[in-house]
Structures are given as structure tokens and as C-alpha cells.
Image: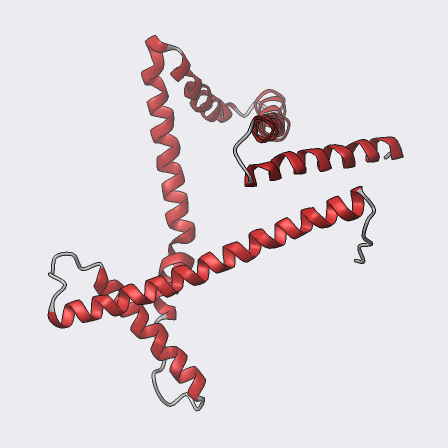
Length: 213
């Protein structure tokens, strides 16, 4: 790639990074311009990628080239999505939407049922004694008690009084700790991204610091 294009790309990245960071102080036109530009470019890239990687190969190679007429069905289903912009026949888009949601739901259930449900339930069946390691035993007790009490918290058919109320309180505390840990992890990830952009601005762009890989 020519050095001129590299420099232009670096300057554009730096300018848009600064424009996006200005939202820290206040929502402003500069931030909205950078945001809208990013969304527009991403939308255009997605449309072009979908056309060249999915639409054109299937229509040109499969439907026209090989004469596989069954490709007409997904093409029609996809085109019906755009009928929502034509008011007299907007109701036709509901069939495409329902068909897509049905296929997607079936696919997700068949693919993710085991890893996201069965495996998580199985992971809570932990030995509570006899592990030979006090830390493992303590961790297992915390996992099992936290899971059970959190589930009891969502028993809304019972009043949270007495024993059930105490168990629900433990479940609520458990969830608060879990949510706090997840939030802390998210904050650390965002700070890491911010530091990466600062390294780019001060190193790759302004050359004020040296970055070692």
C-alpha cells in the first residue's frame, strides 16, 4: 500500500477517534457526525458483503449456472421483506419475518440447547465433599448454594417471608455479586480499548511515545 494512503488512513483514524472521544464531555455535533459516518459505512459494507458473498454467487452460480430452481424460494422470501415499504402490500413482509424467525428459533434451539442449557445445568452438579481440596469444596458450595438461592428468588408464586424470604435474600445478594463482577469485567474491557486508542494517537499518529510489540 502506498505510504500516502497509509498516512491518510492514519490521520482519518485519529480524527474520528478524537471526535468520538468528545462525547465524554457532552453530546455534540462532532460526535454525532463520527457516529453517523461509522454507522453508514458499516451498513454499506454489510450490504456490499452480502451481495458479493451470498446474493450474486447463489443467483449467478446456483440458480442460473446450475439451474437449481429451489434457490427461488429463499430469494422470494428475502424480497418479500422489502414489501413493508409498499403500504398496500406491506402485510406480505409478515410471512417472511415469521418464516425467518421460525427457522432461526429452530436452529438456535437445536444448536445451543446443549451448551447454553444442558451443560450449564450439568455444571451445577458438583461434589460438596470428598474433593480433597478445601478451596474446591468451598467453591462448589458457593456455586451450588448461589445457583439454588438465585432460582428460589424467582419463585414469585410464594411470598418472600420466613425461610423462603431468607433464601431469596441470599439469592439476590449472589446475583448482585455476579452482576458486579460482570460489570467490572466490562469496564476493564472498555478501559483496555480506550488505552489502545490512546496508544494509537500518541504513538502511531503523533509519534510521542514508542510502542513495542
